[in-house]
Amino acid sequence: MIRPAPSRPPLPRRPQGRAALGAAAVACAAAGLWLAACGGGGGGPTAPPPPAQSLVFTAASGSSPTSVALLRSGTSASTLTLEVRAQGVTDLYGVAFDLTYPASLLAFEGASEGAFLGQGGIATTVQVAEQPGRLVVGATRLGVVGGVTGSGTLLILSFRAIAAGSGDIAFSDPSAVAATGNPVSDLDWLGGSVQITR
Image 1 (spheres, rainbow, N blue to C red):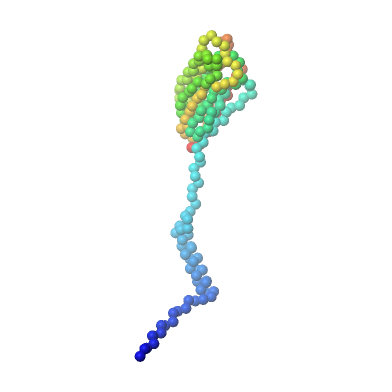
Image 2 (image 1 turned 120 degrees about the horizontal axis):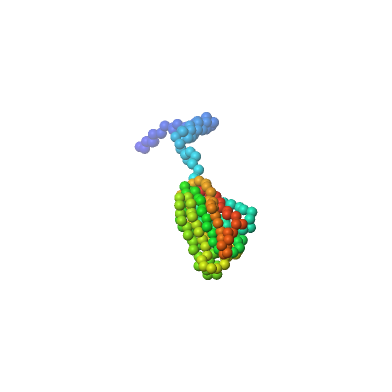
């Protein structure tokens, strides 16, 4: 004789309707508050990135059509290369000057000769002596020859940025001579300023 299987007791039914949905919403809200209090969900705001390193040189301006001026050559955030450039000169034989710069911001790296004074294959000499925050510079043609006329680069100076800040780069006690030995007195000597961000 086959006996019928015992019947299972009925499962409890889940609550339906608005009451059940309300209870679920309260549980989810409580869980969300707990996650926020414990730092869950992505964390707090991130710090802004540091500013990018930069080196900006601003050349001084003048009103004279003839000058010896500093002009930046190339762009770099860590090096400053300056051309010492003659503009609109006549019969220029040589120049001498001191150049002051902020030694707390820039380290002098070296100098090289430009092509202007050596026009026509004439021998030239360039001397640069370094002192703290100051360069003592002389550049001249050699021999019994005429001077040069026009515009061109006398020499190139290189510096390396070593700290952030701002300062001036300026000519001090400048002089220029013509091939006759007479001084060239109508020149503007134009430096500039540097701003370094690190």
